[in-house]
Amino acid sequence: MSCATFNVAASLNLHGCTKNAVSKSLGFRQHTTFHKFSSLFFETWNLNSTDRSFVRETPSRSFHSVFKCAAQNSQPYPSVGVDTDNNSQRVTVLVIGGGGREHALCYALQRSPSCDTVLCAPGNAGIASSGNATCISDLDVSDGAAVISFCRKRGVGLVVVGPEAPLVAGLANELVKVGIPTFGPSAEAAALEGSKNFMKHLCDKYDIPTAKYKTFTDPSAAKQYIQEQGAPIVIKADGLAAGKGVTVAMTLEEAYEAVDSMLVKGDFGSAGCRAIVEEFLEGEEASFFALVDGENAIPLESAQDHKRVGDGDTGPNTGGMGAYSPAPVLTKELQSIVMDSIIIPTVKGMSAEGCKFVGVLYAGLMIEKKSGMPKLIEYNVRFGDPECQVLMVRLESDLVQVLLAACRGELSGVSLKWSPGSAMVVVMASKGYPGSYQKGTVIENLEEAELVAPGIKIFHAGTAFDSEGRFIATGGRVLGVTAKGNDLEEACDRAYRAVENVNWPGGFYRRDIGWRALPQKQYATKE
Image 1: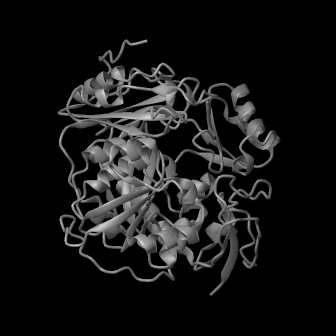
Image 2 (image 1 turned 135 degrees about the vertical axis):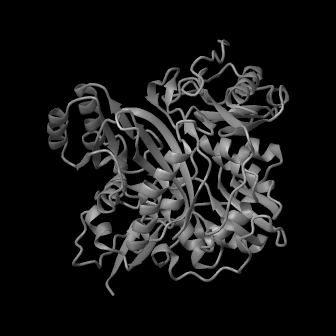
């Protein structure tokens, strides 16, 4: 059996570059052994598939380990039933992360009958004050040994990794290797998000519908191809770029500037030393989520987000300014097509490549205008943010048991229960986002805002306490004001009523979340 040794840093160094190979925010150092990993992996990163023994050393302050792809060498987890109503074994859960997505996960996990305690590292001020979890702000989640030690001391029976960076850096590998049930893919499987080029290669090999594309490291060649294809056209940084590595260029000049920012100026570091030039697809975007146990996948409810910063889907892309669930654009027929043509081939393809995927697959889709059929835009290997917020307030199943079933490869036969009606989240962001913004602005009246109507929950993404105990903004996207309703219109009305009661002069929000589903509605007039 051929075996490759590959150093996996926080960026996985998927981009064929040696510069900036280690993430500044996560210091993982992994000496990784890949077994039964097909030539697709090596072809994607321009590695020699006939000589697969290579080591790249990178500086690190954390840990060094050897693990097999997809945790083939992991210790077996203790067996529990997959009945999602089973609460015979109460579990202590550790959520890794500190944003709005993680707050929503803590909220849903805490409501699970089989959950004993929810811990969140590092968490944030809003999570801590909400009572949805106990925040462990001093746990260094980039130190695998420290996380393992903490889990053992606290009797953690399930770790849920929220953000993509720890997944790409290999945290799940370390935890699974020592027998700690962890919901989230291995570093190798996380390449579906860590490298768009890898994802595109997988689509090519397994006939998964996606936009036409080419990958470039030479800016002149990229510009020549762009000139041949014309605008509009899409330029993507290959690696993780905090949601900012995509340019939808409406002119050739915009496209050339995007290429230069990645391949000439190095604005995205190692993430941008490959550029994917992709066909512009016209249609309606939608988010599709599926839980995966390595061989089986079950769909979550549909959701749709709003990426552009401005009303009417104008302005630059963001991490997401709002979302709602369910998404009318994803009919039951389309959901079935997505599962059959995109999700299942991906799961089977990753398994065939020797790298089983365990976690949540988040497919960014375009429902093409000309064909009405879904195409894959991108994969994320974690819950979307802010889509996670609307999904978690609607979920009625025991999330702890569902995620444990995924960890153990036992999702087959599991079904999920959802509340009827709809949910909507409106993101409140710091003025200036997604560009530069001021930190430390005071936010008030949050408790009152949650009480203006039934079914409102405010999730915190970027908050802290000031010296007087007041909430202050510490990030770009700061709050996810979420509401449930009997239908989308009621959920929308409640969410915006709550938003308008938040006293935050330093923040802003889109006033038209849900406009595609409710085009006639005038949502908010507050300046």
